[in-house]
Image (cartoon, rainbow, N blue to C red; front, side, top):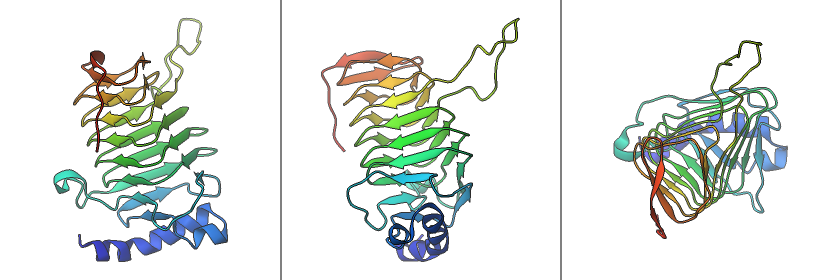
Length: 224
């Protein structure tokens, strides 16, 4: 879609989200631009927080790009904020179309500065998911910090509680990657195509590959 028309179509939903989330002065700056293709549910004061030194128009964009090869074109996206959930932005963030961000009750999602995601991002946050600065995500990436359904032992105790996901600064997560509860990734790492991460990797500047992911190279780095 032509960028000018895309911005025009985004005005009504962007106005709705900004004035629902922020005080009048902040809302008038329109820091968040939301495509008309995004279905929004549960947005209210406190659901989205800007932890930034300067508020700029359009610094956060939902669904305004079709992603690589235009794969997100004509798709719908979902942004759902349940009771007491919160998304905190620490700077600019661009999320391509065809995403599903489901903030469960009491879930907290933190996105560092210069966050960028390709099309078909899925985030299900029931506990805590956090990205550092300068994180780049490929297409079809998934982040789930819980299991969705409780599993019980013989005594009726839940045995599959959720655990937070932490992604460090300057991390490149390639396409088709899934990060599950308990995943922790150190700064300056690269996660290879199709990997599944479900444990902690403390060492910086590493390449992680496989299902489950394991370290195959160290002392590496990358750039946009």
